[in-house]
Length: 606
Image 1 (cartoon, rainbow, N blue to C red):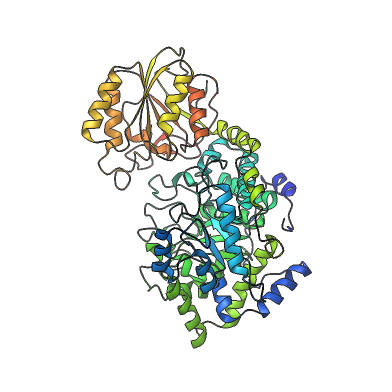
Image 2 (cartoon, rainbow, N blue to C red):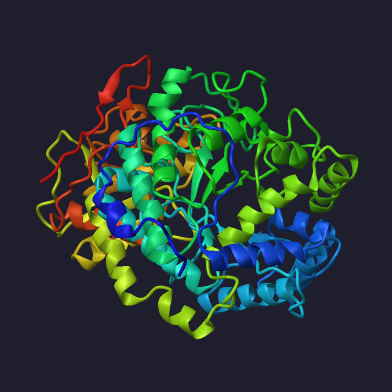
């Protein structure tokens, strides 16, 4: 476990304290109080070649579930992307400082497989133990809720907005601590969480339920709680993201370049508090956003490439001394103004340390080496970032114990006490928004029920809800209808007419631009309401859907579609659980223009 200057007990006791803005101060290098840490960092850096140092700055994906023996398809994917066939060879060739795991790159299957992969990659990073070889920092986006990378049996906690509905710093801490312990067990030391963005824009297509909510004080409090849970509770590196705040945009930085038009005063009031609290809580790493904030930097450059924002505001004003990691450099927002060879160089000049997922790793690595050779970047500047990365690795215990215990990983991930904690954290997050017809709670179980609407192959929420009704004596039919055709809408409505009750799940039904451009979910709900039979609508992601579903009289939101969220839903419908979640955002009317349909803090119970 890493040494920390602030204990979890102190942090949890001070979660309600307002952090005053830090004064502007001159940029300074990190301070490394522990002599052992400073000694290891200095000694390691002294023995590293320039190529090894530059490699430490990069973190990217690799294809395959085994470091040395991936499938033939993964070999081909690695060859196309990196010029070598195995994950181990990618690590060795580029001297990578970090790797990020995804399911689509076939890294995440079971606890035993993940821990074995992590160990194989660590062996590749360390090689024969020669001086200058450095253990690897393994990362993944385990935000929980709708962004889950680790598959079952891993504990699947509710995401940020659900925790915001629950209003409990202790629950946020617990979710982070257990998540971090499970990740650490399989050799992952850097979850890219928590989200520190304040989601005040209901049309935000990329943050939404990934945020704790719309109130800066609540988001700050829960961000600090999760930083403490990850770092002090689990001993992993938390990453507060996305600086300087991605919560007020209707554009997705994966596909476009968002502009945040907050004034400096608005940024200080809305966006800054969670990051200030994260810094005060001792957060090890902060991720940049590919967004333009003219009030902070009038150049038009995204924050990731802005010295004014990263070095001036984040390091100078907020006093952050940890590792600045970029959001993925293959995203459209950071590639619009400059070429892929310039982006990594400009990010380093801006003050970033860790460069995540460049679209062409070889091009990016060579560009940084060339910038040093020409004097655009100095080796001293490279050393500054490598020192911060090495110090973070040392605090993770990677210098002395980089390997995962495979058997311990199997015992830890999905342990019974972890799964029990998932239910305890999830139950208070369920939010009942509308019960105008007095339909809930259901008064008898002997009924026929159709469960339909949006479904996920990985989580199967339709089957989970139908199974919950069946277990309580109902005659339940599961009819998935994700973005249904007109024919399926008609058939589902006809089926609903033959049932006593319909429960329909919706997922971002408000978004008729990207998620559901044909408005199929809205039309399905309208057809179900038109049958005249009772209908319960459940938003399994953004709570805003109710504004676009006229005629709906019974509406709940779970903020995600995990097994625990669906179980809490079924129990609440049957009066086995009293809903206690309160909206952590305001739900406006479909017309917008500041008209409130349901205010922040609204929530029914029975």
